[in-house]
Length: 554
Image (tube, rainbow, N blue to C red; front, side):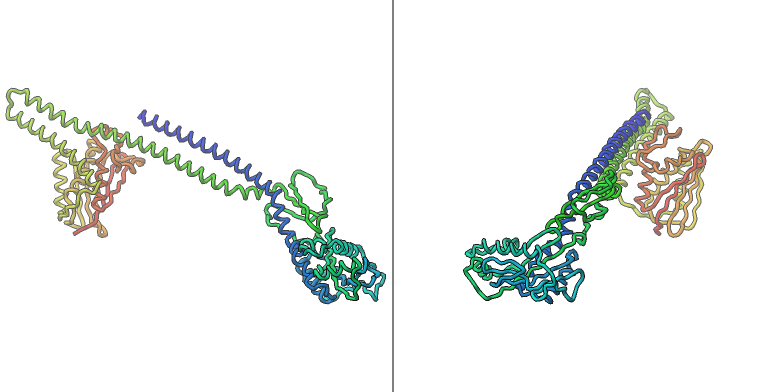
């Protein structure tokens, strides 16, 4: 018992140490995972703004790179109606375009008042139209050569005219200018404004250069269209692809400086490109809001760690259980060997003594011969019975034998059992009750072993004055039910689940020696082999009842 307790304590200490170390590692892993999640989200708060900027500015890039160059497809032949329709599609698809001014211009050899005159080249507006917010069916005419109404051509036109003259003057007509070079020289990007002049054909550029160099004096007129797009940065649609990360995103001037600078908020910003370069995207989130995203990021990691922790605990529990099972099995096997040795030692010693007495005696009377013969015969029977039980148990457990089915008269069978045990134990009172059937098909040898084991247990574990057993055999609902009820010492409730285990012995005054712990395990294997079921119920100092249910074969 001391070894049992110390082995248990040793195993228990090991598993407690394992659990403590695993728990510390789990808590440390959670802490590191949370720190990693926090740093990752805080890093993402700074880095993800680039993706938000790209998504937000995508319509502007599409307008600048794809839609605006469509002006050149008209080769300068836009009129107010066509320009109005063109602007309608722009305002509809690009809400950040608030106003468009359309310059219906000409390049000719006649000097113009409102425009630029260089050499024989004159560039000036024929008429100017303005398109406001919303989709307008009609344009507002601001200027025409016949109706000036005090309107003056502003810096937008003059700046673009200057770029046109410089570009044409420096143009190498023997080379083909690249599209990027043309696009750069025929557009002007300012804050909230883009000016775009339709790109002339290469042949027209050559004529323009000859006109500037005064090498050509022609009466031809060349059409040029110029549009000035007024942009409103506040009309940009902000696409927040990380709503759990950024609580608020707004367009702010570059010079914007928030009044609230408390540590309760996280802030970052990124400048807008192109015509919106005077503005920035301003990102703010409260720290409590960011914590939600941190936990959202942390929870899957924590779940994996918890799963690993659970697996480790399960492994620890299984190791602990196996250690205890192995320890118990070793103890049971050790007890089994000791008890088996004792079982063999007793009859062997008796045989040895009887043999020595016979050997040393010079002469034996008839009475002594019968006595020693009976002793040798009984002890040999004990050894033979013990070996047969071990052999039968092994054969049944390994399914190495077959049922020898014979018809059994249940009344004769039970009376034979009663007669055998009362002859062996005269103080053993056995009664029986049979109802519902007379014969059935079974293996009489195996059934006899089952009855003998249960009867022997009833006698062995009963006080001297209570050595009683009642055997009942009944046919109930198509099955045979056998009950063995004694008036013995009973079995504790906490041991009921163990009594059918191999090598298990209940520690009591009737079971200190002489038991291998195979009797009830043998009964269990017998009943299972006969395709039946055995159960037990017991009360301390009241008695025990074994119930066996077998199939009825007749």
